[in-house]
Length: 342
Image 1 (tube, rainbow, N blue to C red):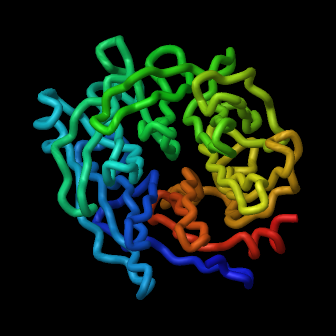
Image 2: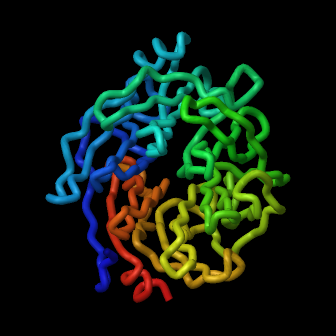
C-alpha cells in the first residue's frame, strides 16, 4: 500500500573502517528488507578495497553491521588472474535470486577493468566471482554502474560501458549464469558513459547517460521502442552537469525523476528534476545537497553517484556518496515528490 502523506527521511549507511567509500547500490529482498552494497578502502583503485554490504530491516528500520562480501584476493582466485582492485558494485534480484555485478581492475586505471558476477541465496553467502564476457578484446575495458531490469523471458538487461581507449555506453542481455547473449551500443560521437536505463512500459525504455568529459555538458538520453534491443539517436536535455553519474526512476503517474549533479563545474550540488514528457522538458532542479565552499583539502566535498530503487511498499530509496567518507540514504515517496518537485 502506498503512503498517502508525503514522506522524507534521511540517514547514513553504517560506517566501515576505511578512509574512502563510494558507489552504493541497492536491492530489495523477498521479505521487503533492503540490501545495500558499496566499496571502500584507502582510495579508488587501492589494493585494500573491498565491497561491503548492510541490510535494512523493513520492520525495525535498522541497518545491520556492514560485512565484506568481495575482496581482491577472493576475486583473483575466482577469476584465476591477478587483480589490482575492485569497484562499482551493482546489486540485482532476478528470478534466479540475488546477483552482485562488480568491476575488477586488472591493470592501470578503470580502463583496465573487467565485469564480475557473484550470486547469493540470502545476501550473506556469495558464490566465487566469475567473468561476465562483455568484450572480445581480452574481456577488458568493460564496467557496470546502472540498475538492471528483467526481460519477459527472464534474462537481464545489464547497462555496460567501455573505458579502454574510446569510451562508449551500451546494454548487454545476460542469462542467469552471467553469460552475455547479445549486446548493443548506444551510438554517439560524444563521450557518454554509465547508462542508467528505465523500462517505462513493456515495449519502451530510456537510457540516461553520463557526460563523460571534464568540460561542462548536459545529461543526455536515448530511447528504445523494443525495450533495449536497439536504441535511437542520443538527445540532449536541459539538465546541466559535468562528468558525473545520473540515476532516474519512474513515478506512479508515469513521470520520470532524475537525480544528478546540477553544476557545470563540480559534484558539490545534488538535485532532483522531473519530466512528464519522456525527457523533452524538465522542471527546475530542486537541490538536496549543496556545498560549494572552497575545498579545505581535508575531505572531497562532493555528493555523487546516486542510485535509486523503489521498494514493494512504494517507497523510494536513494543512496549516494557523501564527501567520499560516508553513504547517504534517503527515503521518500511520490506524494513528497508531488509537493517538492513542481
